[in-house]
Length: 274
Ligand code: C2E
Ligand code: CA
Ligand code: CA
Ligand code: CA
Image 1 (tube, rainbow, N blue to C red):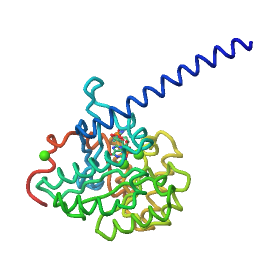
Image 2 (spheres, protein in one colour; image 1 turned 180 degrees about the vertical axis):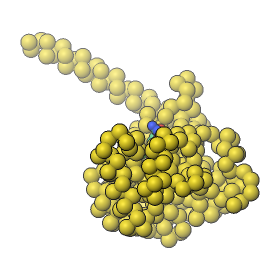
Image 3 (cartoon, helix red, strand yellow; image 1 turned 90 degrees about the horizontal axis):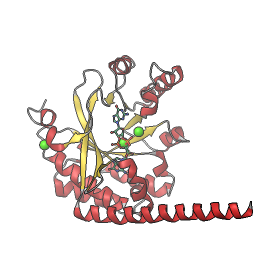
Image 4 (cartoon, rainbow, N blue to C red; image 1 turned 90 degrees about the vertical axis):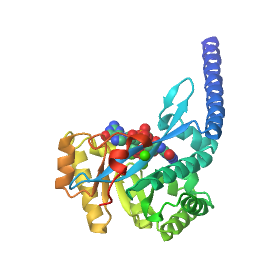
């Protein structure tokens, strides 16, 4: 039995070493990919729920890997967060999406995800300010999405950064609302400009009575606090109808449009300013 145990341990250890080696390789490749800009930002439309008019886009990064093809963010953002690579990566996404949005004819908003490490960087407001100046994007068009976990590393620093960003005229959205442990106290601690109710609830509208009740409650909360609510992951006409009926401010999801490269957005971004 003891021998077996040792064998299992050796096997386990080999697997571990393998995993560690793979992660190290991936981190090295990612570092290089940031330098080489082997990354692309896809944009997903966000629409006013009442009439489905596009009002902005969320920037979602992808890694254009030379052999593995397009790698989705969930396969490398956590690694970037752990290795600190999210700092240059996040700055690249911010600059790129502000640059592209500044080139659109219509003054649509651009929402960019901020990771916990970024939100806890003392120079974050300075970086955002510089990018806005360099790209010429009006701060009123920029929205930064933060999750509650981003506030927990260094609470004071994170709140201070959010206040400074807001003072610059940038809007702050609370992302993945309802999935964390203390969404409500996070909501109390800072005057967010928007609440994004997570797609894990939205996808279960009409499928699960509890999810439906939760979405309704979040919409009611937004109404009472005077904070517009965005529903993410809206896939079906039925979900869209429900959200409209419940006075949801904005919707985002495959029912409106999938994330797509900048050069495919002209139907939305070009033309007369309304
Ligand atoms: P998120 O911020 O919650 O973004 C929404 C995710 O839901 C996106 O996945 C989007 O493609 C997907 N989605 C949108 N509509 C639908 C729908 O109708 N149905 C379903 N099933 N999914 C939908 P994506 O692009 O794979 O991004 C995943 C996560 O990666 C994002 O979740 C965000 O947390 C993170 N992420 C993406 N880009 C960045 C970035 O530039 N910086 C940081 N820090 N995180 C990023
Ligand atoms: Ca987001
Ligand atoms: Ca989400
Ligand atoms: Ca374009």
